Amino acid sequence: MTTLSPQQILLAVVLVVGLATLCAALAPKLRVPSLLLLLPAGFLLGLLAPQFRMDAILGGAFPIAVDLMVAVILFQGGLELSTIKLQHTDRSVVRRLVWIGAPLTWLAGSLLAHYVLGLDWPLAFLLGAILIVSGPTVVTPILNFARPEPRVRGILMWEGTMLDPIGGIFAIVVFQVVRLSTQDSPLDAVVSLVMSFAVAIGVAVVGMVIAVLACRAVRGNATVSTQVLLGTVIASAAFADFLAEESGLLTALLMGVAARPIAKRLNTSLDLAMPFFDTIVAFGLGILFISIAALVPSPEVAQVALPAIAMALLLILIARPTVATLCTSGAGLSRNQRVFVAWMDPRGIVAAATASSVSATLVATNVPGAEELLPAAFIIIAVTVTVYGLTASPVAKALGVRDETPVS
Image 1 (cartoon, helix red, strand yellow):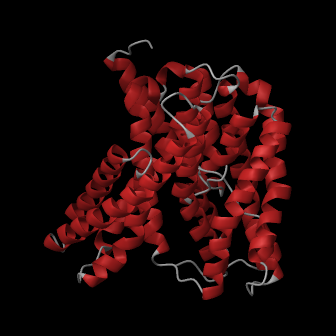
Image 2 (cartoon, rainbow, N blue to C red):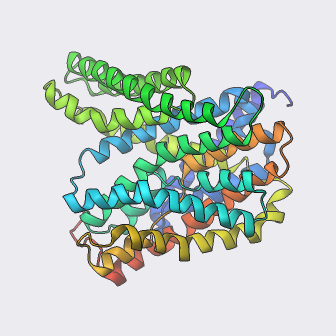
């Protein structure tokens, strides 16, 4: 990799941060989710100025930086989940979507990756696992724009946020199986999965208790409270990853879910820190989408473009409606509510980050077809974001499930 001069590094930062900020500013004016602007902007940056990509600046630290920023975003997603109350039947729907729907989505994605994209079975199973992931990074902006009624929003928020770390960990387990060597075995992958969950739970509890106690100590100081939360989440996610590979994302999500209950028990409020924290997350999200999208341009893009688009449309039109129909039956949802749940399954930054990480490793080890993994995943992510981003609001209106309460 060519070493960049300080001036080139500064210019790269200007381009990435400037594009992310411009997209965030233009999106409300154009009345579209910012994701619809961030993905093509990042792709064009990688196509026209690949020397200014963030991985060129950070080198081996780039995937670590991505993981830690995603952890912060997941923490915020967990915080939002703690404020969303689900009916008993809706909790059942979320459990089905996560524990039944995700495996079915994996199976459908794997079959399509093999028969439509032409990937060998190991890579097909890996791409199918990556495409399980949805997440708050993409679901939240689209739902904020479409404004479905609270019950539907709650189900989709819980599903997307839960699938982020669970799907990410599962994708890593499949990845470990794909790259079997004398040191690795399927049993090692299973042990890794169990260790990831155990470490995540332990570190999340300790980290969140420390964070809440620190926030109580600086009560009334919003700036320091924000710094405490941000620093504790990053440190906890990094320490969890140090102890068990890929456990940091689940740690961050669990910390977010546990934050408000622990704070309430310890007579502490986190509300003062939230506006600052939300700004940090929004800024980081823009940087992430620009940076990941810039990795995609390669000679393989043209080769996989049409099959990947076809695969994305099949996931949208057949796989998701089938999964949602099965998982929402008997839950007391109206037909139109079930239809909207079936019309919402975008893929986000965790899927993109996972694809970029595993594809780089597989390409480096000369796994046949690995160079097609990231372009295919990006195209599928872009298609789902575009389709759902443009149609979510009109579909919600047409189905009569849009929340018409005036925005304060």
